[in-house]
Length: 180
Image (cartoon, rainbow, N blue to C red; front, side, top):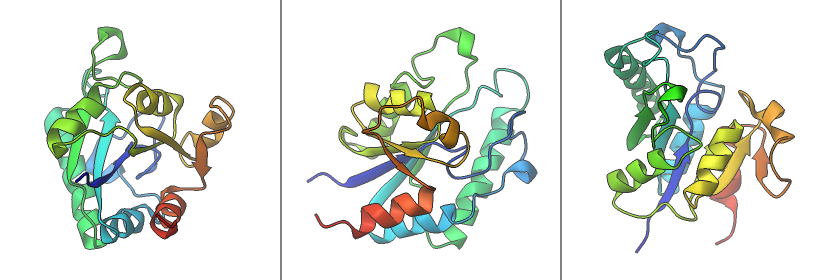
């Protein structure tokens, strides 16, 4: 049996993004309804994972320890809202490093497969940027666009068959109320 999985980008999907990066836990703030959206997904037996590019580490803007502190804050707030993120994978590399894990490559999705012990093919990957959509396609996931973060600008760059939602909460309501 295959469990239902939802993979989320972080910045612009769960939390407000910043042009100059989220560099500390104090700078991390959730988008209205995103934490409740994760709880709603969990209530409907979806396992939630996060796959995020974090080149700020390679750029020297924050350390992996600080990134861990940011993720700890995110996890705490999700738990406070009644939800759980089962795993977080991230790419700490600079875009020029040409690593296998930086989105739009599917390396982070392969890491999620290792964490969850199953294929992510056909599972939704929710993002706000073109590279999220491309990574979803490269990894065999079902790409989903949210219009928060960079989503409005990205909408014109993706094919019209890519489902788009106002925000993560709208996506979670849609996926948890659809008939199977």
